View 1 (tube, rainbow, N blue to C red):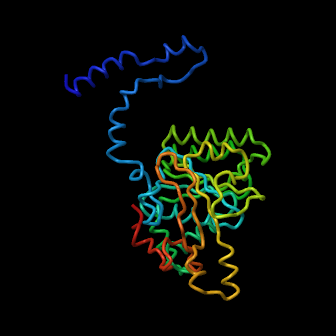
View 2: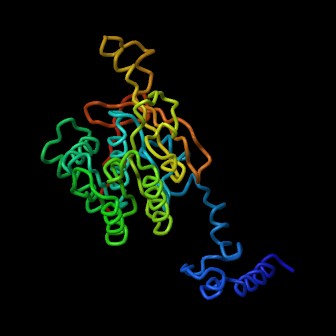
View 3: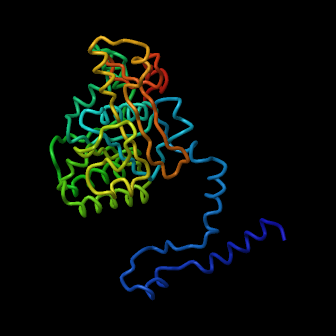
Amino acid sequence: MDALTAYEQYQAHADSHTLTPADLEAYEADFTDDGRIHTAAIWRKDLVDHFNLPPEQTGDPLPWSKTHSLVRLRPGEVSVWHGGNGSGKSMLLGEVILSLALQGIPCLIASMEMTPVQTLARMCRQCTEKAVPSPMDVDRFLEGIGHNLWMYDQVGTVSSQRIFGVIRAAREGWKMDHIVIDSLMKCGIHSDDLNAQKAFADKLSTYAKDTGAHIHLVAHNRKSSGQQAGEDQYAIKGASEISDMADNVFGVWRNREKERRRQEGDESEDVMRQPDTVLNVTKQRHGEWEGRILLWFHKGTLQYVGENTRDTIPFLKVFGGAK
């Protein structure tokens, strides 16, 4: 018997043993699912595709070419971006979203900490490689992102119910692939209410998996956190489930010691070759790599670049424009 015939017989057997809603009702009266229990054989095609296209080649890449074979942002995932106050986590994530929007990938940013203009001003500087973009530069930026970048116009705390309304509208109404929530502390959940934070993280994870959206959640570190380049997801302020239920965890660390030494006039090679920022990938559930991504900050353009040459990224040339 050849392999294909064996599989076909296996599939026929599987089809006859799939649980239906009526079957499940006999086991649990309040079970309302739509028959999601199947034999493993039903996922044969997905399994073959998995090995033909490994995790490090699926999903959307980060802006820095050296990371493309290491980490990806996949459909149906939740990524948590955390760091201390002033670490640059929102600005760095903005650069990631900029690169996606320029590739024609629809994104929404819900920042309750900054106005849309403040967020867009940062991204415009990153995109145009200008400290003070001209009106023509602004037009180039807006034409580049086209209709692939949307903003939720709200500053200040809103309820977690409203946030999920925004997420649903973004995904189901406007088909956004990436949705940024910045930040957890603005989602109407008290910092001491760990059960509510757990429920929120669980709801984010479930919705992402059910719809294929990639949800980015910005979180803060604990005040007592050591602010070290090696700190992991356990530095996140709040319930441990925030990182436990996430698929990816990115820690953003700012090299303040290097900044201090430069302010004192130390421009030695030892100082300059140090990274300005470390992006610490401490969790990647569907990838095999974890580790540190060293980045250098270009102050005039607000860009994070992947090499110590400090050459800025020509975003419009590398990532194209609106599609």
